[in-house]
Figure 1 (cartoon, rainbow, N blue to C red):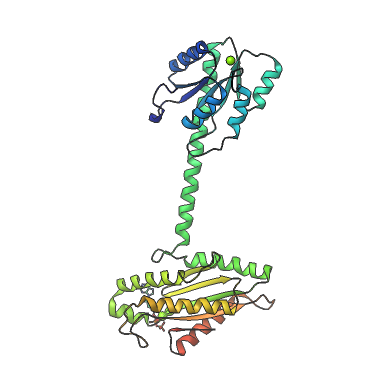
Figure 2: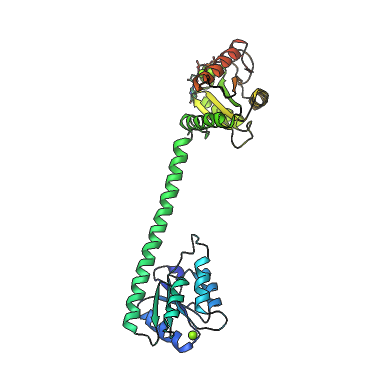
Length: 323
Ligand code: GH3
Ligand code: MG
Ligand code: MG
Ligand code: MG
């Protein structure tokens, strides 16, 4: 039973839960006088349903009710998952039970405040106002926190992504590489690195223009990243027309398969390159190196080995990989 439209979101919503119609009426009148919207439930079970549906800002909860009493209901409210739509709303228990045990039970079940019947209306009003103000502050803080997290993620994505190709950039690659290098040492697994360089790319730019060159790099990037399959593999734009692929837990044989796949997928792009000295289309040269953890190896040696293999691929005629 919702009296006014909560979707306007301007007025806080108070969920009144009491089995006595007269009590609900009085509470409703008081809350409306304070300027709040009101929804009503007649027992704990109804309260749970409305709570999830309406995400109130405060729950005024009676203790003794049929079907489900206030203590049980309050306990269940605490276990509801918090989502973007449903914030944990404070629960104020209103009951004729004055025993110490009842007060303790109420707080143990998650109520944040306790008022006894007959109601002292001025006291209730003050407590309601304070609880709603606190809840709104918490909601705002949670929202801000979430926005901050999203902004951070977006920033991180931006900082790690090459803007032209959408691949990981050099910064991201270096970080990932350092991580995988340490993992290799720890887990005693082989690590492979493939450096890729577009053949005669200067000629390509000279022939087709720099913008066509950019589009070519985008296609090449896509073909390279679609050639690596595992989630731990990383393809990155290493610089200008150079790309690097890091393959954790991959030996020489596995790395050669990926290198071959990259060559094949680039050829399949069939990007016209009339000034290429080797083919009528764009090709790549690749240098592959694999390391198994040994004390005398360092990461610089690894790059030197891949680079040397890449130069060999260029020397031997391009459009190929060398190990
Ligand atoms: P090789 O086969 O020996 O690799 O010859 P190459 O012409 O590819 O080698 P070189 O390193 O001389 O040329 C690389 C070219 O890549 C030169 C540079 O203008 C071009 N390049 C680098 N980054 C970009 C880019 O972001 N966009 C475009 N369009 N061209 C780029
Ligand atoms: Mg009752
Ligand atoms: Mg180059
Ligand atoms: Mg090149």
